[in-house]
Amino acid sequence: MTSTLTLRALGKLRTAPGGQLDCEVTFADGPGTSRTVAHVERELPPGGVPAYLAARKHGARSFVLWADEHRQARVATLVTVSASGGRAQFQVLGPQGEPLGVFTRDKAFSRGLRTRWTVSRSGAPDAVGYKGRLFWWCVWWPCTPLLPLMLLAVLFGGGGGGGDFPRGPRRIKWRSAGQIPLEFKSSGNSVKLYAPDLDWRLGAALTALIPSFDGWIGGPWDARKD
Image 1 (tube, one colour):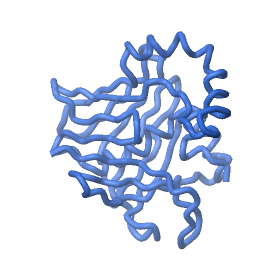
Image 2 (cartoon, rainbow, N blue to C red):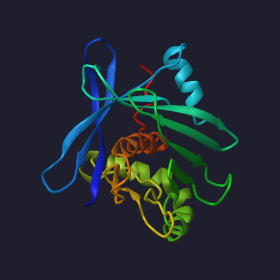
Image 3 (tube, helix red, strand yellow):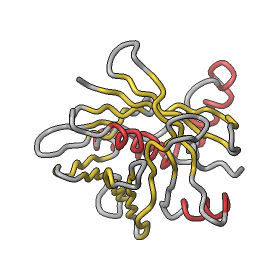
Image 4 (cartoon, rainbow, N blue to C red):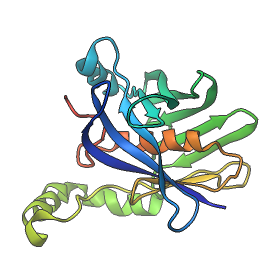
């Protein structure tokens, strides 16, 4: 059975013991079964928000998936293993610090034309996915000089600027040993899990991580300055 994990913005929800939860991840294994399984919060380094924002420019990320909005139990934690030279590696840990898997992001043009995402987990071959299809990138790249005009059209047209900002192709379909274990959908910030043995907590961390690399147009959830 296919399961779907979706990232949803919460705005500024303040809960004990203080601070802000940024997003929530919902889980659905069929029509009408969606439920919240994790609340997402940045885990700030000793230097606070300025230090986090400085590190994220180089590809670093760190956040916690809480089981409830009062932060009483962790579902998982994502930490940066390394981030340099266009490559960033992230480890996902369970509530007791046990390793669940590793994500590797190779930035576009660093080791290929498209951004490459690799999901590694114990006992399974690596799953490799590429951001967007080459066909749609070939359509998108010639249009980038027109992007400022497209943004103005969205802001000042279409019923008061209610349209979506134009963005490049975002869908990612992972392949592993001839199978497709998971897929990131370009609309809705959702990850579909097709492999029954894939830990949903790993999928939840990936659901939160990928949108954090959206450009400024996409409004990454972890890039706020407060």
